[in-house]
Image 1 (cartoon, helix red, strand yellow):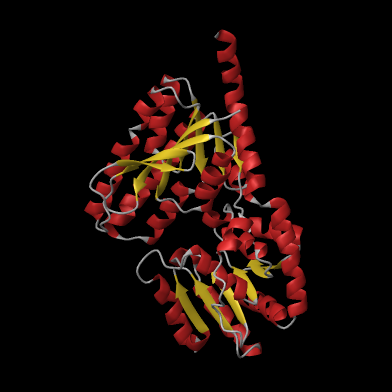
Image 2 (image 1 turned 120 degrees about the vertical axis):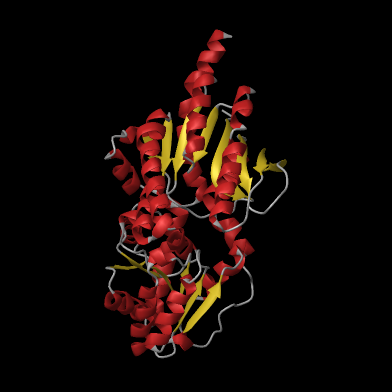
Length: 413
């Protein structure tokens, strides 16, 4: 059964997140499903446009790229006005499903449109957004503290009292998130967990062929966002402890900050501990180049700060490391604990500097065991986290939503 889906998402165009571009555009679209999108442009543009993407097309809306409060407000207003396009598109009758990803006010528009035009409404939550704004409010000052708290409270009400109840089905990131949301009164049977995966064949073929890390010395790599909320100064203190046993070690951090001063948190801590010469901040890199650092590393690390905000997540970096055959060291975040226990692809330790450093040293000093762990991880990801397998899960749920209505329409014809 070929599905016809209209997706309204918080991602900008061009969308690069693998669970958007890979899962929906490449894999679901590659199975013959028509998927159209309503997205806001990533770059400043004076007009809206329609562009082809995969098996469908994207209605790309205008934006404001300024960083002031006024500019950010203008961006949100432009986004809301652009999302209203969903009404005429749904009125055309060419879609079976309208799916909204991580957007709350637009989710209300979609829920209304689904009732008016008798179509299925699906909500996709990739991150506990209301709780994120509550956390930001706790850490902010002045006007932003008030704005974040108001937004968090409003989003929490909309998500758990309006959108989730109105949705015919919901996709969430992990089983932990599914459990958390069920405590808000949403039936578990209404939600499907869709963890992060890899599209190994395509990703690895694009990886830069030349080495990006020199061969001399030993290295461990962190791939991901550098944000203060992730408390990655922890990793600098780990580096200092690893260096006590492995003097030539270097830590490569591949990724950029999300706010001014994020990288400074790491460099300041490195200077304080006297390990600045062992820290390499690579910065944000194209995906193929970033994965080359993973390929060249001796060990890869995935520290996820223990917090209700992050505990329900599905870290992409962990399965990317494993897919590339790398032994990993991670802390006992719920999904990381499950994956490493099942795969035996590395060490899962508490969020403690001594324990994290000891696990890294152990792998650096035993490359044979690190290689065996990497091989086990690659097999596990191929068998459990390939996007072809994850697509099966999503496709099955969407077809179950549409099939009864399609059948009723045929009978009534």
